[in-house]
Image 1 (cartoon, rainbow, N blue to C red):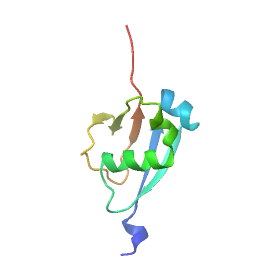
Image 2 (image 1 turned 180 degrees about the vertical axis):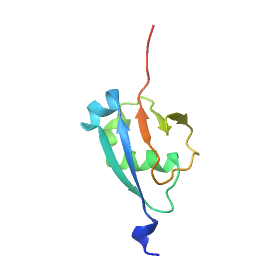
Image 3 (image 1 turned 30 degrees about the vertical axis):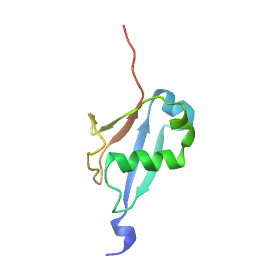
Image 4 (image 1 turned 45 degrees about the horizontal axis):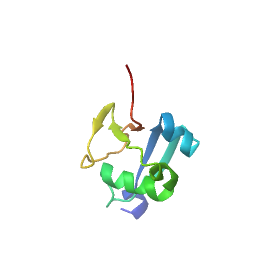
Length: 89
């Protein structure tokens, strides 16, 4: 198996302020076989889009419509979203 076959491509949907800061609705990330958790995804996003995290706004990550923690493993075809804080009343 080649290295490219081991890479995992993840599309991340963006909402609210994350979409405004990055300027896109969706970003596509290629993660290596050694980067398979939400923590690794956050790190990759930080490296590619530092303005997003310089705002100090906490973002939740949802995988397949469920908010998850940083230890959650990512798999091929997972639906991933970056969620900014939500306020309501």
